[in-house]
Image (cartoon, rainbow, N blue to C red; front, side, top):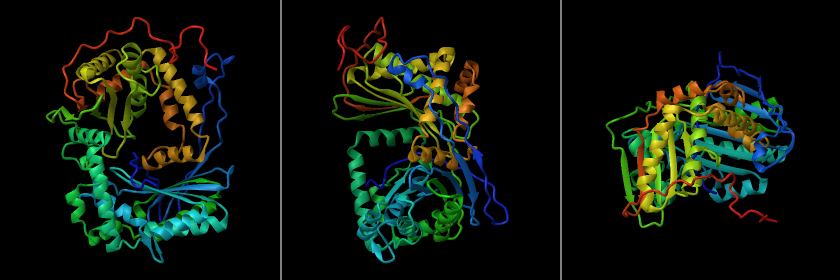
Length: 492
């Protein structure tokens, strides 16, 4: 079980008055996509109609101020409980690694159980516990059956881990060793090196640029007293954001959430995150020398928050330019036409203080400089012209279809509901999709030019230094599919 999987999450607020539980219900509005007359290719799967699930969102706040969103899904006798806190690495302050050490210590021991007993108890109940940390938040999830003899002991142990950890000196020594080993491994991991270097270029001096697992020197200096103080402040009930999905009644979900809140430390204020500012004076590039067969490339720019009015327009714009589909502009030019890479994508991260847009790819070392210049040139052209109407129509259709398919399982619903809960979004699973449907090409182009600049990409490369060569000329004809077999050859 990886306790340190990095996630990207955000924040939401529901109103509460006079210390009562405040409810906010909404029916999620699902879109239905018209079914084509017949299936002609796998490419048409995105256009097929899917039956949406009728999902009703319930929301309330506890007397301590913590927030809860819940969706009932009675199809399976199970539930998923997700709890997060503003306890990520950006809260380390002068104590590097404090947030990660605190998170790791939570399941090292509770009254009457050490870590082995905790894991054995969860295994015997058929329950699953996951823990993760990223820059802004620490997150915990519990999956369990809803029958009383499984649910109650699993929930009790979960609340003890969150609210009554022993945080012992002996466990801290072990956690320090574990974190030190993680840090040494990450120093040799290309992906970790790339991400850290990009954070330093994009966010110089900002708490987001601090390493998620701290530094070896910082971890070594941590004390039990510091960990205890951090737990009391960051893991207070007023800071908790709870998301529930499963075979529960509203009353059961309410009781479960209150059990979690009641187990947490008393209310405590956490400092709000400083907004990310765009710095034109910062370094724009960094190369990390490594003897690899390919050069990894990353281009990044600061973006917007998840709540920003231009979020929908920028999401659609960057899906067209560098989304996961083979038809994105980056995939078409760099992979299909020139054969420079297998995958190139533009991904967006959202944080309370500001987001980021990151383009990543791998290519042959002799083409690395040319690939960077090509991507920058393509983005400059994109800012000038914007997407075509056909690209926009295809992407909006894809978003509608994906939205329906992404409510098929409890874990998919939970993921979407967590985003709503932590980013202060309207109580509608399809809000962002519906918001995008009315966009025009002109609006998308305007949003892009408000927030992005073709000359402001920060660039990180990792690989060997070799003599650069001109890029391969683009193919005269782009393949219409990923199948490269000769005509007449059919896979069976």
